[in-house]
Amino acid sequence: MSQAAQRSGTFVWSLNDPTLLRTQAYIDGKWVDADSGETFPVYNPATHEVVAEVASVGAGETRRAIEAAEAARHAWAARSARERSDVLKKWNDLMLENLEDLAVIMTVEQGKILAESRGEVAYAASFIEWFAEEGKRVYGDVIPLAQTDRRGIVIKQPVGVCAAITPWNFPSAMLTRKAAPGLAVGCAMVCKPPQETPLSMTALAELAHRAGLPAGLLNVLPTSKASAVGDEMCSNPTVRKLTFTGSTGVGKLLTRQCADTMKRLSMELGGNAPVIVFEDADLDLAAAGAAAAKYRNSGQTCICANRIIVQDTIYDEFVEKLAALVGTYKVGSGLDESVTHGPVITRKALEDIKGLVDDAVERGATVVAGGDFGEGDSHLIEPTILCNVTDDMRVFNEEIFGPVAPIFKFSTEEEAIAMANDTEFGLASYLYSNDQGRCWRVAEAIDFGLVGVNETMISSELIPFGGVKESGVGREGSRYGIEEYLELKYICMGHLGQ
Image 1 (spheres, one colour):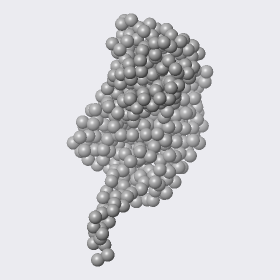
Image 2: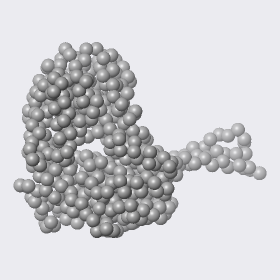
Image 3: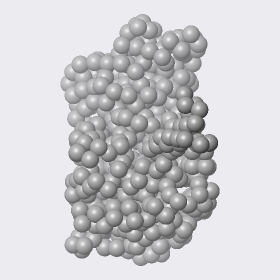
Image 4: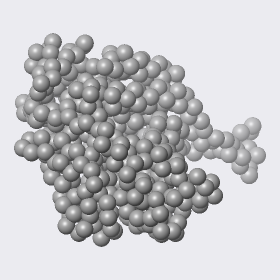
């Protein structure tokens, strides 16, 4: 590819700083090819054109990255929190200075529209800024003991080498939400980006290098051999923590693989988010919120509205309002600033989503908006609304991960709560009502780690992000998220004053 400009379908894209487009692995502060020389293609999902050929590493490179991380982490942990914070703040500043280039890279490899990519880069940087400050506030405790000549002290120390496996839907933010707290407290990171979107992570590694992050503390391992890299991460005893965002099935597999070495785990897994709309809700607000929650990133977020559950007395009116909003959308390449929704990540993803819609229609659902799934190599799906949906359809139990909104009916508050909870997942949930008593009752009764009340844009670096049940363990972001990278140590100081 020319460094000055690259072509993606009818759109020519360029970078102000072409050196941000990195296609090698980043190990121990150096950019390296795979030992085997193997590469894999990265595609633009809007055009199915190859964006880049990226190094495909294996178990051997993963072991070297882990060894480099172990060697580097001790000196890093010995630095003051202030010194570590200064490096992270420089990384944050460089991300914001290069925001447009990072957004273009993300749009080309992931497909989301440029406005959303810009927003994600800023969101990703916010985790670095937050944890750069929060790392200074890792406090211990003094325990008053029964013996007067003893003192009990609790200190917090970094876990050690941490492995991170991130998803393709938020390729920048999911790195920084994991790496920033680890680095802030003195850990070292070994990270595997998704095969579909490795270029966002390698660009961030380049900026971390420029920010002065010492070699070995952040290692990036792109690969088309996920099992080889993942197996080494899970089995290597030097790795003391694994953090993963992805499907529940893969999360369970990784948990089993980590059992033999008793690693600390953070798992942010699948979701099946309900949006409950009560008859006393502001329907314009509810429709706009449901649309934002459902169709953001073309429905490819773990906290997307998966089931819209609407009280029967206002069902038709709500559907009409939502359909009016969907009618204003335009699908296409994310590089086109007039487009509101980009493609889904792969043709297989499109076919899986279409299978869910076909199942619903065969069982009696009605398509009232959208329904066009493109042809050939296209990954474009028209934002779709399904009505007359029932709980025996696959869309009730399975995560859709695409721009399809199934709308269910309920009659009573108790029924709505039961429907919302009728899932093995428990990540995000939303409800709309102007009855404050009902808002409290329902928010406390539904089994989800995140609840948005009259609001669906609930995520930020300030909140503890995570789920219950089969949506995972642990929390990311907020002051709680930094604790996931710390071990408690009790020290008993005896025979004082003798």
